[in-house]
Image (cartoon, rainbow over all chains, first blue to last red; front, top):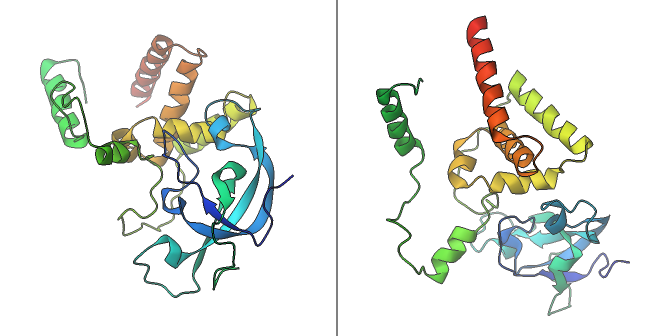
Length: 103
Length: 143
């Protein structure tokens, strides 16, 4: 059962990195839009440390505006970046209205 | 390079200084570091997005025999349930920045696999060293 749906605006949790992560530093604290749901899989926090049958969660493909990620982004406004997160890294965006240019 | 003579060991030490210029502090001082420094130190080594780099080498590379063997070995270890790709990536980070950035891509795989096998008690470091020595003799004999 997925907590988020395609089109939901989500903010990536800004937890400290420690030893290993699949949540890129440049996405933390940033807001994007869910564009695809991925099947449940073991979260990297378990797989990376030998718990191969660990906790399973839905994964989400999230699309960001490049200009939201990089303060000095030099490309055009419609440029986007998509990357995946397990559910625990996402929270509903504070401002739930769709961002211009997203989706 | 031979390390069997004192001068051989001296040249190894010089080589280490040239290739592993990590910042060294006397003993364990200072006892405190700033929050900013701690965050920089704890940043995960493979999380490179946004860091200055380049130009990117986009030339095609034909995998060498040892690289194919490394990849096959890693996959076989996964097939036998000894590890998964995500654990390999974490173990590459655990090699530390000097080794991570100072070695070829598949050398990191190889070092991560080696350390994993020792960590899990599947091989012992002494039996590996003996095997490496045996292979070195064999290769030198073949040359």
